[in-house]
Structure formats: C-alpha cells, structure tokens
Length: 358
Length: 126
Image 1 (spheres, rainbow over the protein chains, first blue to last red):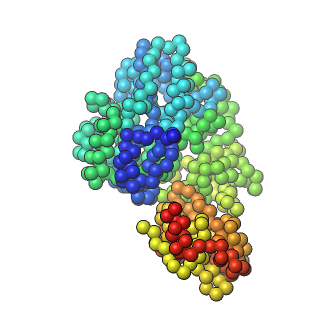
Image 2: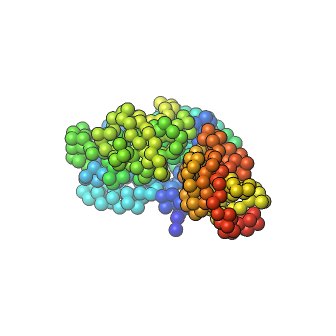
C-alpha cells in the first residue's frame, strides 16, 4: 500500500495522473509532461516532493558522524551551507545520494530519496555505534515543495511572502519552523521548502491560486533532471554503481581522513573502473529507454540508464553505463531499440546547460 | 473526452482498422492517444513487411514511455504514413485521420474477432 503525501487530495482534485513512486502514490502529470517541463524552463513550476525523506543528526559527534557516512566534506562548513554527496558501502557501491544541510554546529539535516528511506535509516542506525548523536527520522513530519524556474525567487517572495532573495545557491535558512533552501533537481534556479503539513498545504494553495506557478508532476521532474545530467538513484547510482563509475568523483573527497567506502573508491579512482556512465546522442529520433542494450559492432557493451527525446534540445539522448573502453567522448556505439539498432555517439552527459543563480 | 468513430474495427489494445476493399488502414484510437499523452515518436515497419494479427508491428512513444503497436489484422504493409516521422503529434491532433500503416489484408475473416464502435466504447469505459 503506497503512502499519500499531505497534498494527495489536491493532486486528485486537479485531475493529476497518479502513479506509485518510491513507496508513495505521486502525481506524474497534471496536464502533460511537455507543458510542465517548459513551464519550469521558462517561468515557474511547483512540485510536491513531500515523498523525500528527512533525517536530523544532532549531538556532540554529529559532524564527525556525518563525515563518517558521507562522501563529501563538511569540515569547516558555515552554518547554512548545503552539500551534495553520497553514502557508500565499504565496497564503494552507493547506499543513496543525498543533501546535507548544516543547520548549526553539530546539527545537520539530511534529505534522502523516498525509495530508500527505510534502507537509509537502517543504514544510518547501523553506523552510529561509537558516536554520541541523536538520529531523528522526520520524514512523516515534513511536507516539501520545490518551486523551480527563472521566476521562482519572485514567486516565493511575492506569493508566499518568504524572503529568499539573499539565499545563494546551495544555502539554507529557517523561518520559524520552515526550512528553505536554494536547491532543486531541475537545472533551473529555485527553492525547496520544508514545513509541517498544514503549512505546506497553505503554500501549495497560494501558489496554485496565484496562477504564477504551474503544478508539475514527477514526469517532468525526471525529464528536467535528466537533461542537465543529474543522476537518479536506481538509474545512474545503485549498490552496483559507485559515484566514481557515475562520474561523480567531484563529490567524493578522498583527502578526508576517513569515510565509509573511502578505500574502495580511492582504488577505483587510482586503477580505473570496469564501467562508466556516459551520454549517448542518437542520430535518429527513436528513443532509448532504461534497460535497453548498448552495442559496439553487434556485441553488448552496456545498458541505458535513462533516455528521452530531450524536450529542450529536440534530440534523442540517453545516459548509459558502458564498458570503460567505450566511454571516450566521440566513440561510436549503437542502441538496441526493439528490433532495430540505432547509431549513436558518446557525448557529455549534460544535454542542456544549467541555469543556476549562484 | 475521447472521440469514437463509427464504421471502424477496434482491438482491445486500442488499434483500429478502416477497411477499404482489400486494404486496411491501421492506427490508434483517439482514446489511446489521450491515454498516451504527447506522442513524440512513432516506430513504424517498412513497406513489404508482413504484419500478423496479435503481434507487435511498431511502437508509439510518449515522453515517458513506449507502447507497442499490436496488429489487429494480418497483411502486407503497402504504405506507411511518412508524415508521422516528422510530426508524430499528428496522432494527438487527429488519431483517426492519421493512420499509421496501410496493409493489404490477407484474411478478411480476422475482422470478425474485432469490435465495432459500440463494443469498443464499452471496452474503454469498463
């Protein structure tokens, strides 16, 4: 039985197409994916992302603990800074990718993927021996909205009355119980707002009634994040796909004294990995989808992780995990789509430029 | 609301056949294009390919997913609707005017297994 977010009734009332995702019944689209995608690229869209999980880590050893489970480095972080990174297994495989918000000294707010909440919370609990911390799993208390697009700042300030202009990219502040950060998963400027259910419901109603912000479903959330090369756990990252394989080494700080997976990831960096995540652009309009085979001269050398006919650049493109010898930019490969194979070429796995306000 | 066009034969998987003499024009119903959302690609067979009733002959893709096209009748492809290569969205504009393939029917008795518009409407509402 899927869980419902605090906005479920509103999605149904808006006529959304609802579908299970990550243990929740979520809106996939309200009108259509293309219009919602373009609203975020050109104006402003609001997503219900209340399915995301939240864990608060506090206590005298909170920073040391976060450093232990997290691949990025929060040492010396200012209060209000946010870091993206992963939790990894000792073999370098990925437990989850997450955001870590520094809310105070030895006070961190961790945002994790919906589908991984139970696994992550269990993992975090297993790692806390020897650390004087409190792990508070808060997913049930928080609703979350993502307001995304070039007009997001004006909409959040004017429609919601939440001052946010002074927030720089990847920073956070609190307004009473409300947590607001300049973050997102679309490649556009935007904000993520965490609050108790009643507050999130009020915000949603104001945003929809204002007419300045289009309700957007998870369908376009995926096309938007894909186009700018952002990974989705389960597609581009998994227990079998390490951050090094996924090309996310920049978020793995091997100069940190210690963290789970460090030795394995350091070895992967030093010795290379058997497979790497690449972008592939097809000459044809046929669409590569998750799980389709990638071939070289008829032999399977990889698999598509996510693919679309990219809405912002009108090309069929995918991300794929391929044998490292075929991962070089410009390599000619083929993708098997149903009965036919289609030629493609390895390109950077960013098909559209991000437009962050730094 | 979806349109339902009379005079066509419909399959449970939402393809239609418009029969003209020994030829059948195969496409997807208006109900199907509604359910799919924006069509962004149509994967079609080639002229002279054989299609077999109940078997896949191509796919219609929305942004999110690919849906197989299942042949409602058997025959030889004599024409494909090339306009769909550049404008797949024509299926959203008018699914009945924009057939996908034209086949030379090999067995007219296969039509007996398909639904008329009333039966198809009931199938969609069920």
